[in-house]
Figure 1 (tube, rainbow, N blue to C red):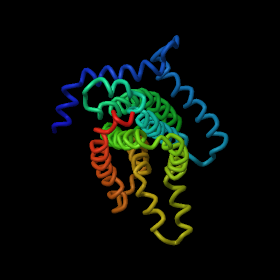
Figure 2 (figure 1 turned 90 degrees about the horizontal axis):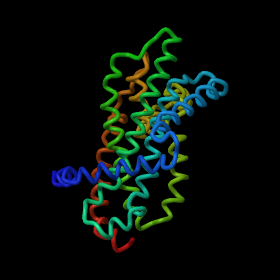
Figure 3 (figure 1 turned 90 degrees about the vertical axis):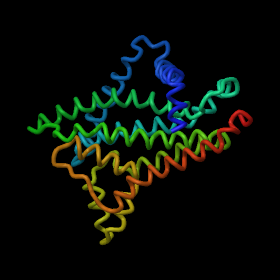
Figure 4 (figure 1 turned 180 degrees about the vertical axis):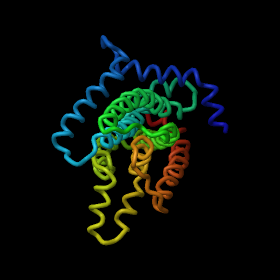
Amino acid sequence: MSVIQDILGRRELLYNLVLRNLKSRYKDSVLGFLWSVLVPLFMAFIYVVFLYILARGVPISEILIGVFAWQFTAQCVMNGMGSITENASLIKKVSFPRLILPLAATLSNLVNYLLNLVVQFGIVAVILAFQHERIPFQALAVPLVIAYHTLFCFALALFMASLNVFYRDMQHLIGVVMTAWFFVSPVMYSMSMVASLTDKFHSPLPMNLYLLNPMAVIIFAYRALILPETTFPVTGFVLAALLWPLLFFVLAYVIFKKLERLFADVL
């Protein structure tokens, strides 16, 4: 509660940091924040065209949902990782809750993600209309998934930000880790493809282990709410996958608070 009070007490600083992060992305560009909408539009067009040609049998709407969700996570990790080291002068001169820096990185990416979702919903609605379907009523619950997804991304940003202060090699290693994580998450493929592959093992264990991946559960949740006739798997492993990011958030917060007092000295 004291941390929340500190953040609320510095909400103006947090607002300015989020605004600075957003402005820095489109600094000196003619269209400015309009790129937040144009970029996902262009990317969506590329995905739709090339996936229609190359990914036969893979629903384009599922891939769009997976790609935009993954981009939000990846951007939070990469921006959050440098949120402390890139603000060394601010940390050395001003006293404020350091947690605000990775939080600002996460929230600025959330703003972009919400703009991306507007584009995503529009494209998915058009695709479903051609299939004589529409986005179901349960899509109103998508904000709950967004909130959970954002909390998980904030935990990742906290963890990476604290480690990057002491181990700068993380900047090089994280690219490899994120690439591997991308392929073991259902970003470019559906749950049915995962099930068909794991069925070859004649055991439910591979599928259950796969569902321990929190990004798999998050992407499946988005798809189950946005797309008709798409179900969300409810198993003990899925419940564990939903629980452990919350535990990871607690762990990331504890690590960050323990190392926070050393940031100024190391930087």
